[in-house]
Length: 122
Ligand SMILES: [Zn+2]
Image (cartoon, rainbow, N blue to C red; front, side, top):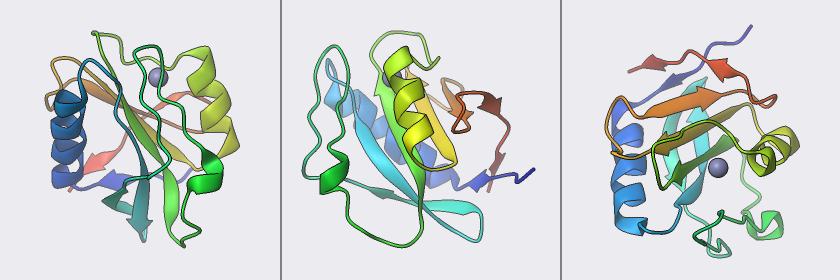
């Protein structure tokens, strides 16, 4: 099975954006090069709400290298919701969820089936 790696700066950027977005969710796409997630892609059509981030997939830039998504959960649960599961299934292979307090230990990575996966930090 493919094992993903992610740059530390990407996690930091997700957590920073998540903090800034409170009380709403933060949501973005992830771009990778050769299995290493290196970049966040912010979407103009993203609607953040207190209940759940809604991603307008039609607004997603058609760009090579999009491998998944990242979003935040206000609160301390970083497990995917039912809506998350459906979304994970519809795209990509790596999905990050971070929760409060949005630090290096509060995030988790999931595959498109919503199962937790181990990733390497680089
Ligand atoms: Zn969620």
